[in-house]
Image (tube, rainbow, N blue to C red; front, side):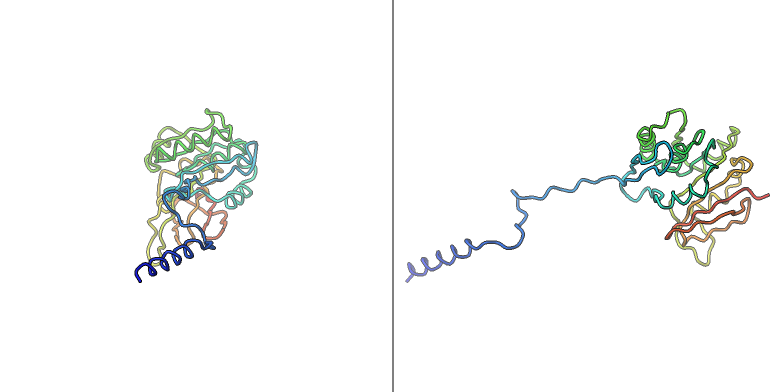
Length: 234
């Protein structure tokens, strides 16, 4: 009886193990799927002599590159104002805005970025874009420390561009976002040359107070992003 039970058990095991599997093979020690390689966020220069060049940004949430569609709208609005301009990019991140300006004929640019890692991405992107080293200065420091230093040195810029990390929703209270802090900075207007433009990006949910030294001349909307074109109030 025991012998018959063993024979039946053996045949049943053979039938089970001999079936063809219809689903995906299990991931075992000898059949592991390769791990995905983390790739940086990829964007490009849109126009000018470096148009089409691919730029890179570090992976993660620490930097939020300005989307290409938003950049296109901004530079369509700026038009010929970029040619020959002296440009200052604050919260430069990847340097995409200042590099776009240089591609379109700006005379020189200064990018201010606090993170040494992100500043290195700006330098690499400048090389990728074929930008001569003497046209782009990368300052690795806090924006609100750089502003008074640049003003004390007598620097002025035809274009100031800033698309800082977004602030929180602030219904019923004054914004404390980085964009609002730029508007409240009393030294920043001194860096803008007569007739110059300050282009400031922020989230739609972040309601800003423009009272002070700035006057809005244009507003662009794209999804959750707003781009304000400002000039120094008379």
